[in-house]
Length: 57
Figure 1 (cartoon, rainbow, N blue to C red):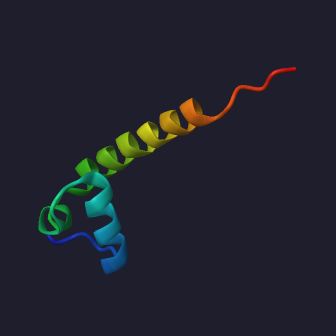
Figure 2 (figure 1 turned 180 degrees about the vertical axis):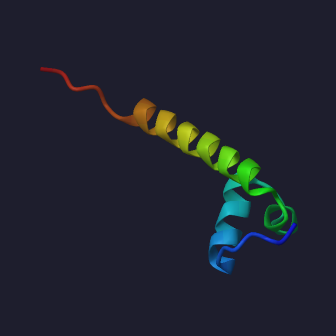
């Protein structure tokens, strides 16, 4: 399996966001990386929804 074809800056940011070592991230299968990224996006969306003040009319 070849390493992911992403920029070094992107790899560092993803490794930090996913809390995995950079080497592990670079050799992670693409489908697993995409799944983890979707989970991260879902968590961020839920956090944003929780912190958004409710509108009161």
